[in-house]
Image (cartoon, rainbow, N blue to C red; front, top):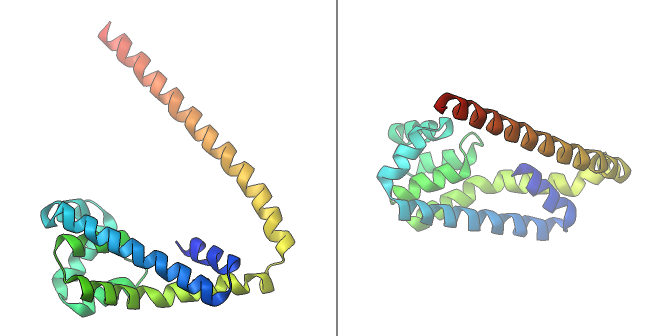
Length: 167
């Protein structure tokens, strides 16, 4: 997400970029909350208990129920945005309080990374950025193709072993 905030900061004027990023965060926390509300509390708690970040959310919520814990979960980048939103939606935390605390907690990080994106050209020359992109994109494509080939070969090997086992 931080790279996205920086990229938007690079693409737009600072004020526009902050509004674009905050609008995106607003949309993300609303949709995740509603999804958690739809799935229900028990399902979300089972889901979160299986994830490392989810266990932290459950522990913090059990220790300090209330607005302070929601704000802390949003302020610290330790807690994944979607997991917290799902949990609070599933536990039917009051929506408007959730939305306000979420935006207030996430906004400092979003504004900071957006402004960093705006000033990145002052510290890193554009020619270097373009060169890195021209190197990174083909390398990523090759990496993804190699991973797909390895997965396909493993699948074929597993199928062959299964056929030999059943024969």
